[in-house]
Amino acid sequence: MSVKHPIISVTGSSGAGTSSVKKTFERIFRREKITASYIEGDAFHAYDRVGMKEKMAREADRGNHHFSHFGPDANRLSDLEEVFRQFAQTGTGRTRHYVHDDGEAEKYDSPPGTFTDWEDIPESTELLFYEGLHGAVMTDEVNVAQHCDLKIGVVPVVNLEWIQKIHRDNLDRGYAHEVIKDTILRRMPDYLDYICPQFSETDINFQRVPTVDTSNAFCARWIPTPDESMVVIRFANPRGIDFPYLTSMIQNSFMSRANSIVVPGGKLDLAMQLILTPMILQLMERSRRAGGPRKMVQSISQSA
Image 1 (cartoon, helix red, strand yellow):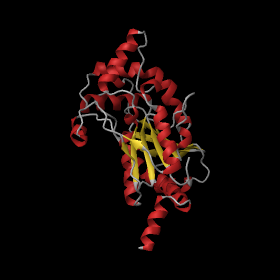
Image 2 (cartoon, rainbow, N blue to C red):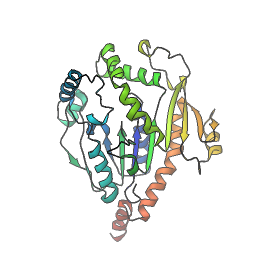
Image 3 (cartoon, helix red, strand yellow):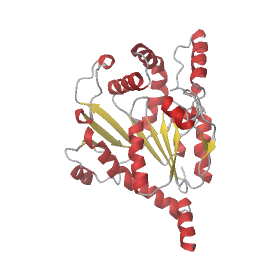
Image 4 (tube, rainbow, N blue to C red):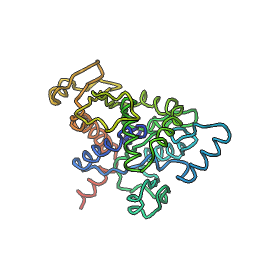
């Protein structure tokens, strides 16, 4: 953790909805005029698309049919931890992008399934934002969680998570249903060992729960809409959280436990804005007092 150079991580499985949560953070950063740099979890995969297929084939020949991006061997977790450590100490670091599709290929001028070149995090960065699979991971070799000042978990109930992944991979990436199903099954051991434990390390979890039947995720024709779901928001440390204020501002919300509030799915963005904005501003105020980039910018402006 770093007072001077704060780090926020959003962690969730493939298809969990972390990208939507990232958009809410982007709106907060833009409104509050915070200069954030973004790190994608996929950028720290150990293999590009072709290399991953070849590695999976070699592992399968050895009898390992569960090699996946969820596990540490398919990722550069030590490099990710080093970036977090370096940014926390100096406000610097390096990252890259993984190119998923043709749209991103045009944006980054690199073929789908490959990585861009490594590039430095801009010196003007006030806050580092991570979104991916391993924002709070802890293994015998690495401890990424210890470097983050605010850790967010995005955790739909598992059937909903599968539905979202199936629809995304099928419609947006063109994968066949059987391929997606095989991927889900192959990843399950790593999901249990490396993804799930992270949600005990997060500061806040957002868990979307459908209010319609999702019993068979593999034949669902559509993703339940926000109005067809509720979101359970769990705080690891509820001290200082103004629950009466939240329930008064978010219609039809209620407390389910002393550290949890339930909100309608359609109110998730509002709930995140109300909960996260003061936390982010607190991080930035601590950074300013410690002489972080925001204070430096203000000092330059005043001297000019």
